[in-house]
Amino acid sequence: MSFSVKSKKSGKTFFLHAREQTLRGGTKVRLYYFGSEAKEGAIDALPEGYVISENERTGLPILKKK
Image 1: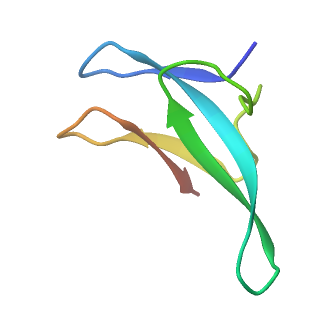
Image 2: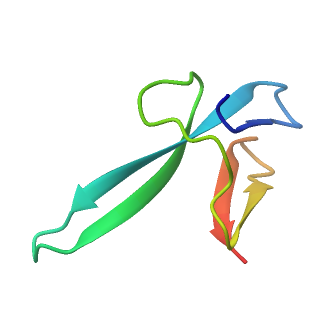
């Protein structure tokens, strides 16, 4: 089951995804993003040290460090 959050403003459900990205210098970073469907890369739990907030104007979820 993918981690999901429901928007308070729009009522839509968003699913948390993660992917590995290699930067130009060769450093690998892990990117987190929300999508409207649970696709490849969907993760089951909120990463440790992060909290979810919502953009008041658009209603889109935002992942922030504590």
